[in-house]
Structures are given as C-alpha cells and as structure tokens.
Length: 262
Image (cartoon, rainbow, N blue to C red; front, side, top):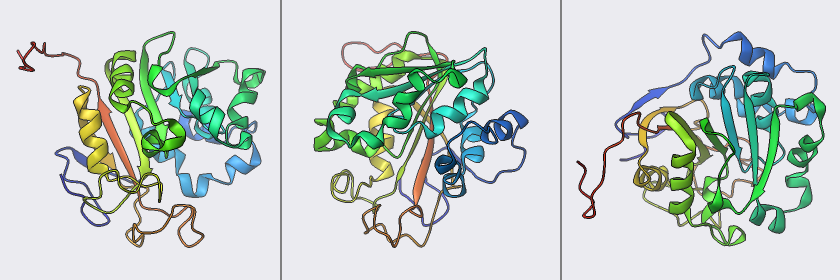
C-alpha cells in the first residue's frame, strides 16, 4: 500500500470525499447552540459534517470518542445519536497525567453538563479500553500516532486495537483521522513531528482483524511537505490528514494455533 499524492491511498478500498447529501441530523448537531464558540470556530478546518457522514454515525448509535481531548467531536456525536443513543468519551489516564489540564478540560466538564446527558466520560489506561455496551463506532481524531509516544508510556497498540475490535458490534466501524507523515517513514515521526505513515496504521489495525473499507480525502492537503511539525504556524490546521474507515467483519473466521484461517 502506497500513499499517492493529494488524492488517494492504494489500500484496496475506495476513496470518498465531498459534502453532498449530508443528513439533517448531522447539520442540526453541528448547529447546536450549546457548543462552545471556540469549538465552533474549528469547524472550518475540521469539516465535521463530511467526516461524521463518512463514518456513518446516526441516531440511536453507541459511539466511543477515544482520546476525546476537549470533547469537540463528543458534543457533536451527542446530538447526532440523540436520546436513544449514547456517547462514551474515553480519556486515557496517561493523557490526563502527562498533558496540560486545558487539553482535556472540555471533556471532563461533560461529566456534569446536563445538556449532554447521553455522554459518559470514561477514564482508564489506553490499552485497557472498554465500554459498558457494545459499540457501533469507535472514533479517534489526530491521536493515533500519540499511542507510540513516550507520554503515552507508550501504549500497547496491538492490545488496544484488539480491545476496540472486541468492543465493537459485528459490522462496527473504527474511524481514524491523523496527520500524514512521509511515505515509507513508518513510526519515525510520531514523537518528533506528531505524524504517522498511513501504512503503519493500516498494518496495525488490520492485525486486530479489521478490514479496511474506505478513505475520505476531505482533509487532504497536497501542499503539505510532510516535514513540518504539525504545530508549526506554517502548516497548523492545514496538515495533510488521512481519514480511514475500518470495519469489523460481520462473520469472523476462526484462527487455529498456527494462524491459519478456517
């Protein structure tokens, strides 16, 4: 699998983009007047409507926002899934211990915000991921690369991906958004530039049993040289970002002791 400039990844899935046909329940969620103004300002570069439509999140779903940070997507998910759905905002203990408090405060206040009563904040080590109910979607945005970094201990990524696989319902979606590193760089730039080679994501997630299904190019930027730190003012909020949708198969093959599918 190779990352092709500006448009698509040769994963074997399909490439999707654009914002046509966004359901009303998504646009209504984004228009929610309870959202903090500083988060609304981020919509211009985060493109939440297209991303949520791509993930397939809908009313009644159970969704986990893994490493939810300030709860930007958590709040939108809450309105999308509605009173019959549920959102789990998952904050790893490593993130709380090693990041500035203002990076997670927006999620923590949701514990007592009655306007988002269908949100439950969960705090536990990253690779002990679990939720009280089976999920339709697990979502992580701009944080997958961090799992390999020192401040996350680092996480046992294989264990985490297996836990996410187990927590999802058959047919459930694992949606990953992250900053793109140079092709062939693997995990080299996760600590220094906060970027990751999409091939590394695909390889790690597929080992857990997920099937790559599609990618969206809504956050692609062909002008990003992939050599700048993501917080560099020259590229901040304009990085080339990969959006990958993986799915848990509805029918799982049994694997014997020799790793042979039967």
